[in-house]
Length: 514
Image 1 (cartoon, rainbow, N blue to C red):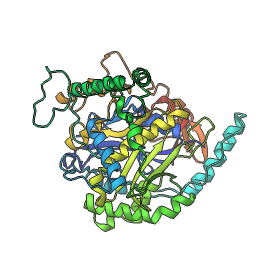
Image 2: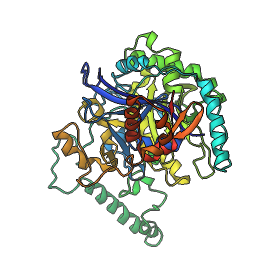
Image 3: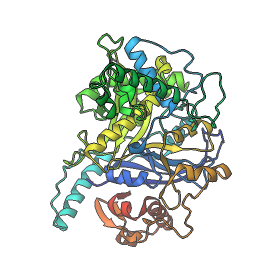
Image 4: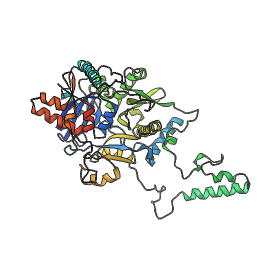
């Protein structure tokens, strides 16, 4: 089934929750009636992002707070000191029920959905996103069938279910929780300043090991020596920590086995976002109650703004068509809720999209009673580990997209701490390591990151006449459609859409016009 989108155009001069500007925000948006995972992957690689079925792209050189798409490279990711602290805190809590003291001081509360929400909700509510979707669905199926017959193609894909009527949506952004700043130098020992001229403090440990080794050799000159020659297999009297030069991997820290007498039972479940899925259906009311509790406590939302309709529209309705190709990940591609269950109840839900090249984080909501566990940081680390796991079967799936990085907004800069990471150049759509971008961002809110002045957007719209239009129950190239149009504003809108989605998507997706 092809992607079907309805372009809604440019919206300028509305309230921004990042900087409180009354009319500083600017973005272009479209309503996605349905979308393939490949089309959405290509769109987020051009700076688009979805909220429910509304897909939007900030106008970077106009908006007050430019939002740069950020991705982390999980295969090279090393947890920072503060990340390890969060993982150890979780293990201690699960094993012994320990709640570490003073843990919230250095981890500011993440405004996960951002305060931008209210204004965007109002804006998108104004949009007239209404058409007879049932009819549209049937028409589209007919047209696609006849197109494929014409081209002599046999459609191997299953026909999608008829499109579900959704009338409006909210542009709500991003997920995660800030962890405190990552410092590159080694932390000084308590009570001492960090003296970088002195040898690293691991020395005492090495001396102790050396003593132990000599002692063992004296005790048993023949036997024990072998274990020391193979450093990665220490003899059993050593705890595994003896691999001093090999830091624990992210997986070691997350999946460390708990004692049988552990205080808590914890599991993470991946549930497809679909009311036809029994697990999604059976956990829906618990998940919804958690969302309401989170929105009211963390974002001070009034109850009428976090009803079932808003929850469903924003977090349970996705335009992505689920796909399960044999070469893809075992869970398939599409939208999912990653549910964190503690002692039989859900304490957090990470909303994610699994796409051909990445896991894309959509949103996170959690039980405020468990804020002491830093669930924003914890869930981001779990999602990075999940991406690594999917990569094992599907090698091209190797990135973790964290939504938007907003350098001009202090509460959004924490995303740059999951290193290595890249930002998307807003002009040429190439990825640039964040370290190279930060100096420019210090000088200017809007930056072109690509240093090559000759470089252009390789997938820019070069042949708009080849763009696919869905009009009056028929699919046609824009070149044919425009001959039937008298309205000059129509051409401007279509060309704007083409320039934003790029040539490849414009030829694959169907632009609905009525």
